[in-house]
Image 1 (cartoon, rainbow, N blue to C red):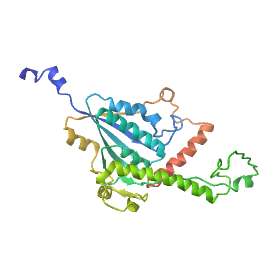
Image 2 (image 1 turned 90 degrees about the horizontal axis):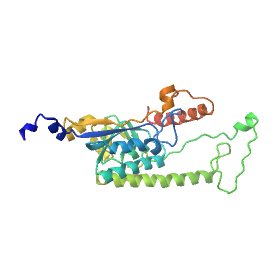
Image 3 (image 1 turned 45 degrees about the horizontal axis):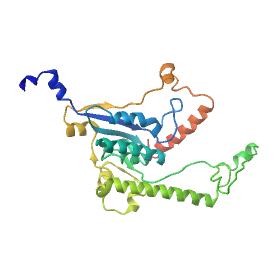
Image 4 (image 1 turned 30 degrees about the vertical axis):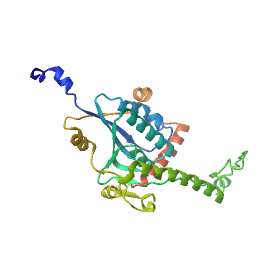
Length: 284
């Protein structure tokens, strides 16, 4: 079989292993488009996730995560889709944190078999937060009479233009508590014995940790970057296929990506403030 050493057939038989790199960058939220800005959600990621697992000569899928979190529902939907395909195809998944893998971002990281971070990555924030604004006196000051009608005693809660009610806060805290329990159970299930024996109060307090501390807690498996890790695991000939989203036709051809007018401008501003506040929690 020595004659095969330099033939195209030999090169064909010696195909290099391929790692599909799936970027998960940004705030996790429903909606979003090329005009209003991108969000991480299942609708926007479904094609990329499928493409990653359909890669030829696939050895593993690497998730490049840089997210401060966001919607727990979208986090769970993305998690489920990645795990479904990984289990169906028997493919290993590894997550690599960049600046932040926190809250919903860590939820995404949990879908990996192993999690690796940079020494300066911010990891954790296993908790639930809701934020908003209250304007109970604004309408009166500007001379606007608001008319709100609802059927059902619990239909309107936490209305930003009405005084805050204690029972509404209790209701919100109950919902947050239930979601927090789901998050904690996911962490325990996915990390298992790797979690150090510590009180839940510390691990699930919503706090964040840097680098080696996150490793010590068992939230992640070590310090590594995608290229070095995969070259060590699959050999120096390993190839990387980065799975990028496809830009829409109008945005690509007409340059509409940054042109936002009318009502879209208001939506974009609100989204920008919300997203900025999420990143700002981690000093970024």
